[in-house]
Image (cartoon, rainbow, N blue to C red):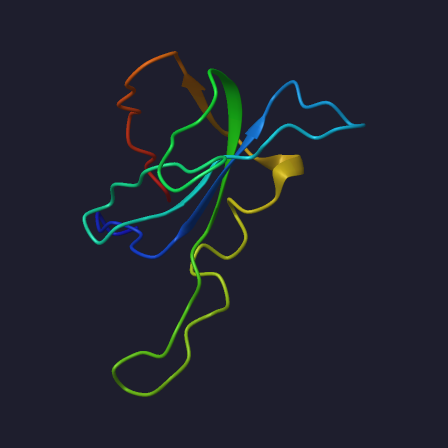
Length: 104
């Protein structure tokens, strides 16, 4: 937002072809101060299985410098509902550099 990285946002990749009986693992990450993140699925920063994903993002609010409180989600829920998630990502086998997600 405003061209700044969503530092400390929580990113969750949900497989598009998720099985209901045994849900597939959900790769997740916390966004770094520079806007980058490394996904973890089974262990710390081990990446994500190859596949197509919908992506949800929740950016927790905090306390502003003036002491006022930010909303619980700085993105106002626009990217956190898996049912309405519009962000998509494809992970291929091997090293991946995903395009950045522009949040508005």
